[in-house]
Figure 1: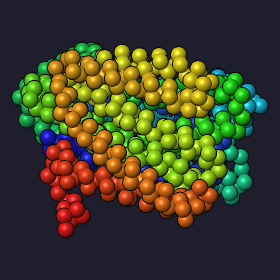
Figure 2: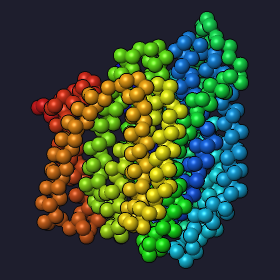
Figure 3: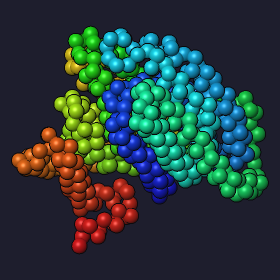
Figure 4: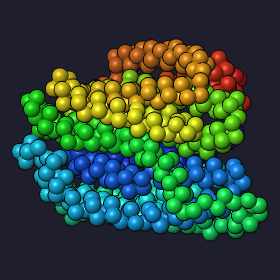
Length: 540
């Protein structure tokens, strides 16, 4: 169990730091390029994320599972052979994806922009930023294979460190370029956003350098283990790829899930809002909340799920391969309960403090639109996290093909209902469509886990209900504070007041929830005795 917690916490902290930096940088980025620049940035990044997932074909995480499986059988050579073959495959597929995205930029821009008169963004602007971000596809896929190889050896450090370095280098380049273009050169928004998207390529180079250093340092030890093995399955390369792709197919869908939902919005949101009679500027503001600025906040709680799924997969695969049913059930229980006790209070707190969070970070302009949208969007973060973890559970118990069914069902609902929901509810309709789609996918995944291994959800349900009680108390405390502070703090009018109210709400809400979870022994039962470090805060 310590392997899951240790690996999950390492990757969660790295992922959280990466996402936190990703949230922080959009504050000055928003100040430089505004809602128009944010919408333009999202128009380029969403197709890029789709092509990135397709170009990797789900191989990096599949390599993690593949290597973990054969390592547990004492066959290290087979995992090494797959690693080398995967690198070559990703170099080719990444370059082909770059050519596809670069050459189709004009076509995609025509599909995305409904009308040149609908806002401040032209088709040629979208095409330009799409071409700029496409260069990252040359290097990112092969870099991610190296991460998958280390994860298969239950070594999460290289992934964690390279992830953080990649994000830091990307953000420094992005903000520097945007500042030079917009402030020093008084240039155009599209130029600044173009360089901002190109930063993905620069960050990828930095990550590759870090992973190369790790490889050089650890290769002697890996080679020693390789020489000591006594048995190899000697699988032909063709059969290696057949097995790898049987794992990889569903992985691509897991990585694509959020991007696919956003892609539906990319092609339908502007048209549906205009058809519903909404103003072009408000449409751009709302889209920037859903696709970039608000989305950055919503996915932060999900970083727990990302780290947890990456750490859980090799461990679950080992338990399932060795047919250790009791340990397998404990690991699944722990994974789901970690999501419940950490993600639920985070998304609910963000929803209750949505006006303060958006106003404090991005300013009060259009807050009557942006704040409520974030409030509705925040709970969807729980569904994103649950989909990531439940899909990882399916992969660990060799039911990964079902992820195709669950995601397809959710995506079909999003496609069929998105425009109608936007007509009925405005910009919130796109959020409702995403929540419905993710909810369908999660429900189907959990049903499949239960049916496949007869997993009992009783303990998860009981502890989730306890979390719900604690969260309800937390919300009441925050509401009371907002009412009291609202009598003398103008947080609806001043940004500094929003910052104060946000800080008070986050600190007090987190303290109340953690105290309740700690005193009830819920934290200790799920996370282990290391949470006793909180003694110095709660038991003086």
